[in-house]
Image 1 (tube, rainbow over the protein chains, first blue to last red):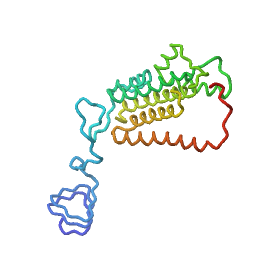
Image 2 (spheres, helix red, strand yellow):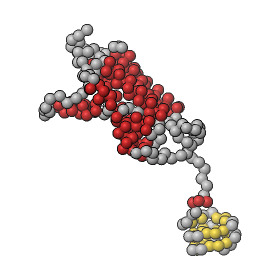
Image 3 (tube, rainbow over the protein chains, first blue to last red):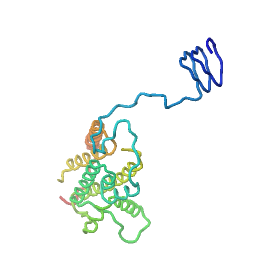
Image 4 (cartoon, chains in turn brown, red):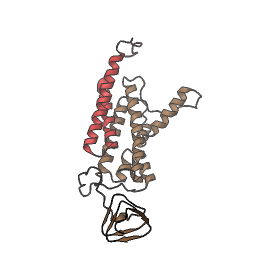
Length: 201
Length: 64
């Protein structure tokens, strides 16, 4: 209704509304002038909002590593299989999820760490003898479980008879490289899981 | 390659590159993180080494 200073209505139909304070559950109007307008129900389909965020370059066809502008990541593949493949060999989980460049690059980096660590005769942790109740045994057990995170490369080294050489000059460095490679591969497992779950690109 | 410094630089390079590729999608963000991590590790290690320099060394290495 025209000319009202303030009011409340359940159903307002007007062609020309001028009000300073209008509260309505349903408003149909062709022209509304108000200093304060509150509506309980808003048809969001008719609301256009500007795109937020910085626009990114459009992805080229076939390149699934670059996220399209303003798109949300979607679940892809089987997350358990992705995680298992990621553990089995560095980067395999990402290749399964069709993240080609990401999988290959991360695979290469983990393998570089493994090769350097093995060339320096670093220690490849494993359970040796019956378990004992000591801090050293607990640390050794923890480091062995961490080393298992390396997956396929660990099995390859172990089956090839590799064990490291404590007398080697690079022993400590090699051990650090091998342990870091195992931790990196564990991060790849989580990353593959997150990509498969649709939490990230 | 048994130089302490070169091994440290190689370690810092690989780890920095790994996290830059893992945590970011855009090239500029990756480059920024890589440089920060790499320089942080290398320069930080050198700084700690100089800070430890006045302190006495340990027993001699048992092999050359």
